[in-house]
Length: 150
Image 1: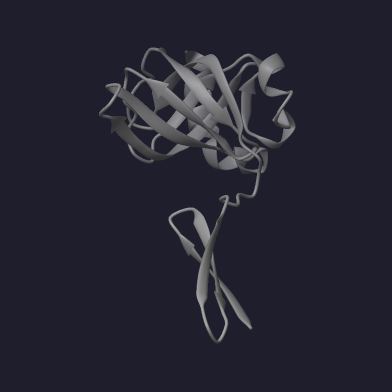
Image 2: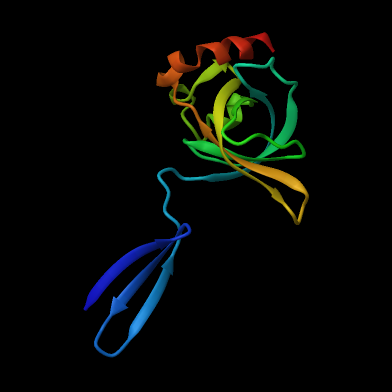
């Protein structure tokens, strides 16, 4: 009996090959960190090195993990943008270690947009944000200064 695995768009399939039959088994997606579903209000603002900071927009955090979060909002974000997120640290600290991510202040963190799209069913923009690691602080000093000005 031979068993192989392959990945298909976040799903794993297992092929078991025996002499008489082939069977496919689907399993749950596997991620590095557990995602926690939530419905917390967050405020966010895009930051760029060339322009002045935008005003804050309100959105909902749909899920969070140690590596990032998914937000939904009426305001879109740009691809690969750096986003300043205003959070309630009491909610987040229950699920993630805040000392590992780049924090500007007690309730503000930096993240990068990894994906985004418009949900055609709801008309709401959704985006996946990847938290920037605290050890990369030196690379983002200019954006940190701009974030402190908001």
